[in-house]
Each structure stands twice: as structure tokens, then as C-alpha cells.
Image 1 (cartoon, helix red, strand yellow):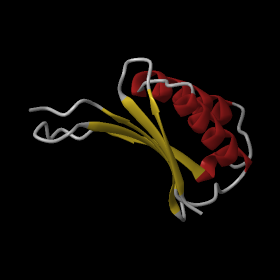
Image 2: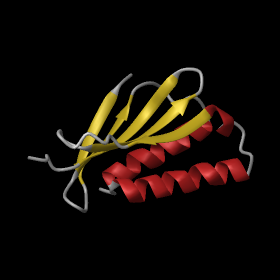
Image 3: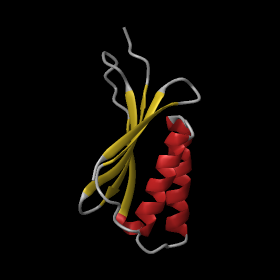
Length: 109
């Protein structure tokens, strides 16, 4: 199961959500659904990262069952010669990435 959705953000950039595989547990499902909704709402990378980080931290603080299996990470490429994109990844420790939020910035000429 793999699919992607794309949306124009409030800042006129393109944001996307991709689900690569089924989420690992209820915590992963909740975070994946939040990531999906952030794209639907046209939220930019900084807002999305802050919301997902807060959600992840809340699950950790409450010691929610399954949070230890879900990793939240990000990547911002530093090569400015191509179209820059920023990614947020939700990963399952044993099976890799299961959902991705990406913001594509305008092409640098």
C-alpha cells in the first residue's frame, strides 16, 4: 500500500504526504493521520514539524504504549543547486519509514 497526496500550502509552496507502508501501531496511526491532515490543511514544514514534534513528545511524556517503536525525524538537503525540499519522516524502528511529509520550495535558478 503506497499513495501520495499533494497540496498548495498557505505560503504557496507544494506540500505532500506519502504513505509507504501500513503504520505499525495506534501511535503510528495517530501520527500518520495528523501528518495527513496537516497536508490537507496546507500547513508548511515549520508548522508541521512543530505540531508533530509536540504530539510525539506528548506520547513520550505519557509513556503511551507503542511510542518507543515510532521515530520522528527530518531532513533538509543543503544542496542549493536543485529544487530544495524539506522532509519529515515517521519511521518504525524495525521496518523503516511508513509516512513522509515533504515541502517543495521554488526552484533555484
